[in-house]
Image (cartoon, rainbow, N blue to C red; front, side):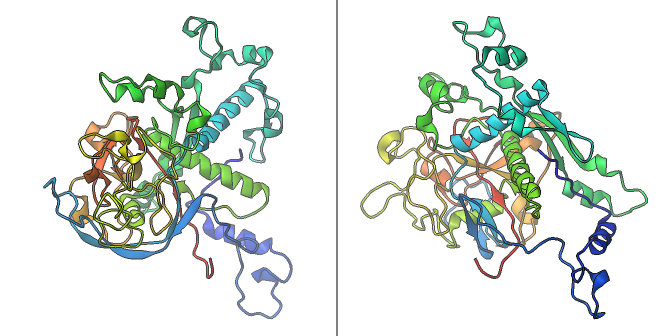
Length: 429
């Protein structure tokens, strides 16, 4: 996959190059009438609708509790904020969608070890995906060549060859824009660009043992064995994915799309990412500023008495809402923006750091608070906001305003995620 370079400096020289390389009659240098006409950085732009995503328009809402703060934690004080429009996945990322990521990582690692690579224009080796299609995972000869990707003989069960999940690692490489913005004001003393590039190897296979680990003295082995691997659960939300794995998926999804666009000589798009806490709450409300739940009602049932989400009704009647554990990612009715399961099913990771007093000092325009916690940081600094409640939570956690958190390196059977992407505004949609 061709790498995507992002430059903080050198924009002036890049613009000049574009001008000088423009076609006759199009670039500023070749205009014959001496007038200002402007120079586009690319061909005519046509924004495609991202598959499986819906547009959340710009707007203003009151972020915080729409009802009494029964926890009395004072971490969700009401505040009016404005949000810029974005695209958001209509459903949580499913097992099938996440499996595409896992298979891509698996195949890219195998192709590299088999020598199925080619040299790019910048001198760096890239996977030759034409040759990579020849990888046959059931071929004994190929299995022997990729022995390091499989479990060792002493870890086999009945001699069955199985991939070692620990061998599936994604090479993350992202630029920390916030750190760069804070440390490049003085050009004379500013660190080199490399100081703001975060490189990390991230294991990406879902932790299937969460189904057992999360619940003491409970029989959940069937879910641990089949939830991610069986086709019956293909359209169910992926779980067992920690915050780092979710951000790695977003990074891969960005590179996967932009690599295709570059191959077609089209302009690349913005990065897929996790939503901020404020974006998530704004999207969950569906354009209704003062409502308790995404469906607009202050109640968990409709007028017929039917439950409106997948959660823990009453004192623990789990199957009453139609699902003992998770349900399909597109179950129940969507909210007014067309988003499914913004309450219940699985809680969702956001990009925001969980800080109790964040609402007191965040900006009222696209509020956000982030921190790229290191492995050596305290657990407090690794807290990331989760929203929406899950299949094992009581109704309070399903409210639009309820904040919760988990640690960025923790995997759970009740936390998944969905992506957002920023695309330039268009006159017509």
